[in-house]
Length: 382
Ligand code: SF4
Image 1 (cartoon, rainbow, N blue to C red):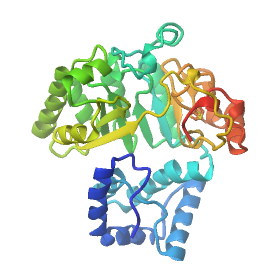
Image 2 (cartoon, rainbow, N blue to C red):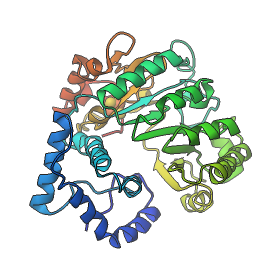
Image 3 (cartoon, rainbow, N blue to C red):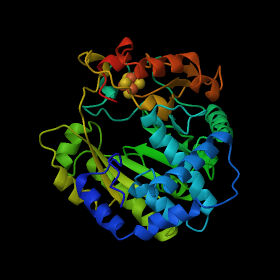
Image 4 (cartoon, helix red, strand yellow):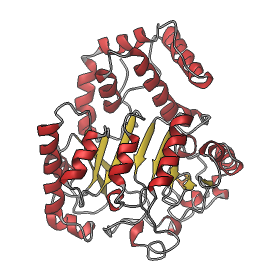
């Protein structure tokens, strides 16, 4: 029986529930093994190699090489009737989770995080949006619909399977967000939106549900109005809760078959935050709760150096960020883009992902020289 995925980004109480669920489901893993017995499937060379590797793994150790998370299970369960789609999905998840561990770069980024806007309407106390040297030009701006479409067209042609609509800013501040979402419809396995939930409207709820967004993450750190408003400065707790409930009502009334998963995601760093109360409160109004501990300062550049840390950062093999103006970066921890790897206005996504700057970063990290790069020399991501 596979163990629970340690990287599933779920709090322990949910892991327990899933663990019990999985134990009743040997049949599920047998079904996955069965679909890999397929004799003919059209895949490109890279994907076919992964397909063969998974098959070999199943044949040699009678097991599937990925411990599936709850969201992966849900996707597969919902698409059981389409074996080829499930295989393609598992190949994508393999690239996303196994390639970074093995330090293999796919030929094209399987996962892109695209920033509709870099500004935010809140000033959370643990966020780089309170860095006054950041909240001005050249860092602040809005992505044009034209640039967004160009990125999506390249991503689809190249083989990106998942996108997140957010990075440094609040995506609902871009008035073209509904048109952007329309443009992503039926193009990816996963479309995720990270939002603070303050500006959700009825119309936007319909667009999110109608365009097949797969995950809507509400960034919210407390179940208590007073604490929430002290952490998420300028945010109104009652408005966010009202908006989440409005989303649920629209979903239930008009999109009962929607596959979307809603998440409450909290950053835990304040002594008054209580993970259990938080979970009890939010599990009543969202599908899942994710709590992450804040280990480093929000203003990355002011962190202490850690010359003794040499483990490579897996982001370099897993994902790429595209800022509002087309600049590309390996992460948003480096929110001022000291590590900039290219610009989609000047080069293709494929060229940037396989370019010299990215290669140098990957090589240095792989060879225990991450400290040659700032802010990798002071960042807590591995
Ligand atoms: S180590 Fe930190 S700063 Fe460097 S690429 Fe990874 S997340 Fe970004």
